[in-house]
Length: 381
Image (cartoon, rainbow, N blue to C red; front, side, top):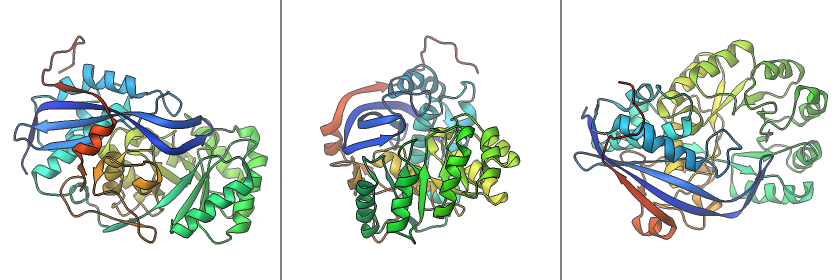
């Protein structure tokens, strides 16, 4: 295969507004600052990734501002003007910095895109994906009442979504989920707690067992795998881990402890496509189902999610909904669309979508072009 050598990295700073506010146990989001990372190979081929950060460090320790700092001062200097034989090498090249996985993933995924394009392949083909279309689920933020939630669910079920995820927190949980299940006895339904509970709430969470949920996602602390193992022994509803899993090693330990029956793989949270694939393969070997969660990505991040979800052990519909459900106008062309709950995997090379310059111009705040490996910090060889 043709190798790549990055001659330039372009950071496109954009601000995008959600069609409607999105509320979780962390708070409410109305807009996002995003940094789109464009890597340019010496042959002129470019690839795209994005920082799937929030404006505040509530989901994890990173924000868009800190991710950009890590990219500029540590990761880009490490990767510029170095021959990369295969994008699977990049994760290891960035391990000299601990965590900061979203920043790592932003440039790692861009390199996967560029490498795939240069070799005339899709990312799915490079990683061993087998699906031609993926199932789409819908994530619903915390609503003001069970009645309002049921109306939202009815709308999305009618649109064809294959799974409904409902955000919950204390005071907006059991009765909300029960109302949905009574109205829709047969849909694939799950709850996402975003670490809003403790082990002391086990008896309260047991009430979910009667609702035949696909899972409850990350009910306990964001960095826990021990108490989740205890909780899983006390409830019938499968526990899914999200925030607790940042690496292959985290997944291995959680599986050995019995902390979960399902793992949500987010490319940004685990540091890129290579680590995502390793976790996928480990889960497949151990009978743990996986699915791809969402981080309110633009079309660039969604395109990477689509490519990754073609791997065979993504057996549960993910959160990669159509662009029109979040943004007035997305930045990629063609727009990501869903038909009968399915998103077709594009045939083109790389991520299969192109960033539209005119759409990008509408949301751009500033742009930086980096061609030098100079950095104020010493970079280990």
